[in-house]
Length: 136
Length: 114
Ligand SMILES: Nc1ncnc2c1ncn2[C@@H]1O[C@H](COP(=O)(O)OP(=O)(O)O)[C@@H](O)[C@H]1O
Ligand SMILES: [Mg+2]
Image 1 (cartoon, rainbow over the protein chains, first blue to last red):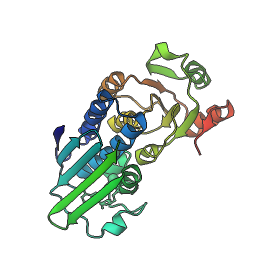
Image 2: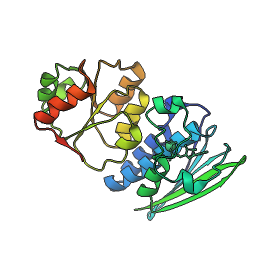
Image 3: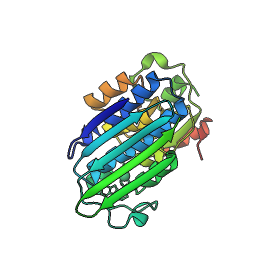
Image 4: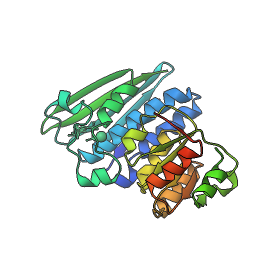
C-alpha cells in the first residue's frame, strides 16, 4: 500500500493530520496498538519539524505485511550539525513553536526511540529527508 | 480514580464526555510540553495541562490519552472540541492552577508516572 500526504508551509493547525490518518489505516489493518503508537509518535514529531523548521514537505508511506516505511521530505534549510540536532535539548525552535508545546529539542530523539530504522539525509540549503521504518 | 471524583475534587466542568464520569484513570501527568507527553508508554493517563490548543488534542490522540484536564480555566476552541469529539475524548476544565490541581489529585491517590 502506498500513500502520500502534503504538509503545507506554516500549517500548525494541521500538524498531525497525516499521523492521524496513518493511525486510522494501521488500526484498520489490525496492527498491534503498541506498534501503532510508535509509528504515529515518530511521524507526528517529524510532521511538526517539517512545519516548525522547514516550509512543509511531503510524506511518503509504504505498508506491507512486514512493516511500515515513512519518508518525510522537505526543501527547508537543512541541518548543519546532525549529531548536535539529535541530542536531547538542542533546539532552534521559534517562540511560536514553543507555544504549540514543542521546541524542547526532544523531537528527533523521540523519533529515534520509536523506530527500528532511522535514516536522515540532510544538506544545508537543500533540505532534509527522514526515512523511518517500524517492523510489525 | 473515577473521572467524576476528579471533577468533584477540582470543582471542574466537564466540557466533553459527561456521560463517562464512571470511567477511571490510573496515572496523572502534568505538562505543557507535548514532546514530553509523547514519551509516555503507560495507558490510563489523565493529562493535566495549561497548554490549550489543537496540538494538545493531537498529542493526546497519538499518545492514546483519552482524558484531558485543562487548568486555569483555559478556553477550549471549537476546533479542539471537534477533534476531541471525533477521537472520543473526555475534556475537563478547572479554574485551579496546575500546581493545585496536581497536588489535590496526588493526595487523593492518583499515581504519578515517574
Ligand atoms: N526538517 C528539519 N529541517 C531543518 N532543521 C530541522 C528539521 N528537523 C529538525 N531540525 C533541527 O533540529 C533541531 C532539533 O529537532 P527536534 O529534536 O525535533 O527538536 P525541536 O523541534 O523541539 O527543536 C531543531 O531545533 C532544528 O534546528
Ligand atoms: Mg521537533
